[in-house]
Image (tube, rainbow, N blue to C red; front, side):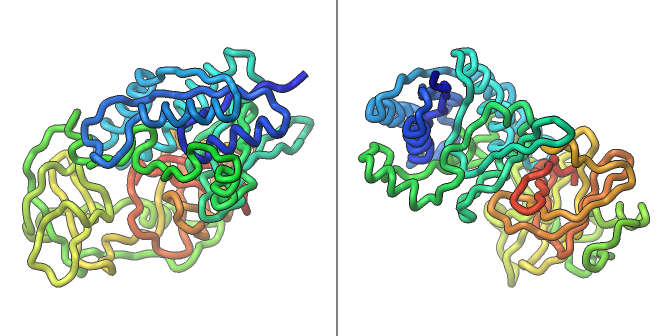
Length: 399
């Protein structure tokens, strides 16, 4: 008897080819299209909306001769992803909605709907891979990088669990993007030449301040310029050893705190919660030799701190901290013990090359010290750690 797979057909080329691969491998395939957002506030005019995606998804299902269904998960998405985004921005943090969408919607709400149909698996068009190993008589699933290094999307799945991985399939994880396009062309799929989606997962490319103003109020505040010489840094050199004094660990993983008294007023902004570390656009402040970058925000007092130039020390940090409640191990069998440390390769944003670092566990928090200074470490974003091509764990950055 054929195994049944429900694939999330999005109207893009990746999920289209993934559906074909599954059918070609002998699975009984059913397509399920998710509508997760229908509010156009803040969307750029050139961006397609969900109706266009639905039309392409239906055409692909018809071409591949597989059953097609539509499901509305917009209420779940609003509560579990969008509201979280607004809340995080209000606190001066910068969330990653794509990571949340995978954890809360694609591999939870969507997966449950798919499995209700009697499906054995759910599938997506992600560029990542999965395999299984046996340890102490127990099956453990591993989340691996996609074979296409330029398109690897494992980072976006850094918060999934063993239970979620058990029922997941990634049909194009062994392929490169050019090969996926080539197959779509050969099959004459309607999505073969369609552009990849951009912006926020299931929402699209947005003008962020306009989008956030749905829930967050504009309020004028001061932009304070902090001179480079006022940013006193005492970073560790290289990666320290397993034993590290707690005071040094905290010094290198705690975000800097700026004071208006250490700088000068450079301009006015519309709300500190609309800005993020490393941001350049949107400040609209002239008069400096080099561009100004956001190096800190204080949402309580509605202040944005900026530094001049790419080399400003306020843009760089040696480490970060993840609070105990935000630490997530995909490989729970590899979880660090208290006062233990381990070397890993880490990334703090999608497409960032992996960085050498050591993870330390202190008071159940995770502290990460990098080999080299990192630009734009941002609270709310996710740090993910890898052993080779396997993603081991992740966590939301505290600061």
